[in-house]
Image (cartoon, rainbow, N blue to C red):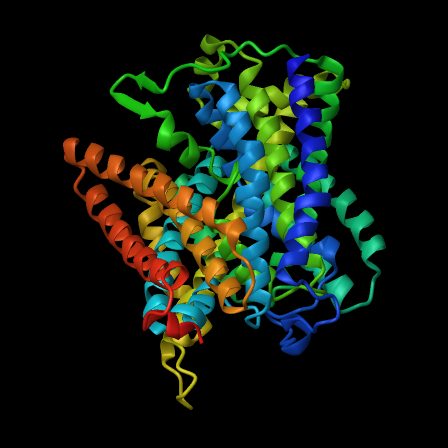
Length: 542
C-alpha cells in the first residue's frame, strides 16, 4: 500500500507544483508568448529549427533522462527510502525544476546560446572562459562514461544493440517524412511508434554480438555523425520516438504498482554513515550527489541551453519542456526508488551485484507481470528502453560539447574564425578524447562525473540568478538551491580528493582539484556581483 501512496502521491504533488509554482516562475521571469524565439530568428535548418512542443518535450526528456534518474535513487536507497523520496520530490520542484526552466529561459533570451554566453553577458569574458572549460570537461566525462556504459550494455545485451541500430534508421525515415515530405506529425507518430516496437521485436530475433571495444569504435563514428548532421534528420526524431518507449515503460510500471500494491520492505531510514566493505558513505553530501538527475543535474542545463533552446517554437513552451520535463523525470525517479524499496536489504544487495539497471528491470518486470505481461518479456523490454536512453544522452552530450567548444574559440570581431570553431574539428576532438577515456572503464570516470555534474548545476543556477539581477527581476527563488548545491558538491569533492589520495589514486585527485578551484573562482566572482552593492565589479552588470 505504501508504494501506491508513494507513486500516486508524488504524481499529484508534481501536477499541483506544475500548475502553481511553475506558473509563478513563468510570471516572475516574464515569459512572453508574443516574443520571437531564436528558432524563428535564425532558423538555419541545422541547429535552429522551430519544433512542435510535443516533439521537443520528447527530445528534451529523452536527452536529460538517460540512466541517471534510474541508477541514482536505487544507489541512494542505502540511506533508506524516506530521505531519498523527500529529496526527489522537494528537489524536483524547488531545485531541479527551477534549474532546468531557468537555464532554458535565459538561453532563449540569449539567441539560444549556452550558459557560458549568459555568464559572458553578466560576468564578462573571464567568467565565460572559466565556465566553458568547466562545462566542456564535464561533458567530456559524460561522453566517456556513457560510451562505456552503452558499449558494455550492447556487448552484454546484443538484442538492445540491434534494436538501437534499427531505431537510427527509423528516425532518419521519420525525420525525412515529417520535415521534407509533409507527412503530418500525428500520422508519422502512429506509424513511427508501431515500427519502434517492431524494432524491439526484431532485436530479440537478431541479436548483434560484438566486443565492448568494437562497440566503442562504432559509437564514436555514430556520435560524430549525430553531432554534425542537421538536428531534424536524426537526433531530434530519434529522441522523440524513444520518448514513447519511456512513456510506455512508466505507464506500465504505474499500472502494475496500482494492481500489485507491493509493500515497502526496505528500512525507512538506515544511518547517516553507511559502511560497505572499505567504502564509507555519508548521507550528507552523498545522498544529494548520488540521486543526481532524479532531483537536479547540471547536465540538464547544458541540454536546455544547448539543443532545446534552439528549437523552441514559442516562449510559453519553456515551462512545459523545462519545468514539466524535470517533474516527469522526478516521477520516473520515484518509480525507480520503489523497485528497490519493495525488496528486503538482502534481496536488494543480491540484485545490485549486476547493477542498478538490473534492480530496475527486475522490479518493473514484476510489476508488469500483474498486467499479464510475461516477466522475462517485461524485464527485457525495460533493459532495452534504458539502453536506448543512455545512447540518447550520449549523442546529445557530444553535440553540446561541440557547441561549447565552438563558442569558446569564436571571436565576433574577427572576419576569419579559427579552425577550432569548425564543427567537424570540434566534434572530432571531443569524440577522440572521450573514446580514449571510455576505454579506461566506467568505474574510473563515474565518481568524478557525479560531483562535477552536480557542481555544474550550482554554477548554472548562479548564471540564471545573474541574468535575473541584470534584468531587474527577483532571484530569491534561485538563492537557496544555488548555495545548497554549491556546499553539497564542494563537500563531496573534498571527500573524493581525500579518499583517492588515501587510496593513492593520484589521477583521480588532480582532476577534482582542478574542478574545485575553477568552481571556487567562479563562485567568488558571482558572489561579488550578486550580493555586493556599489562595487566596481557590480558595474559589469550595467
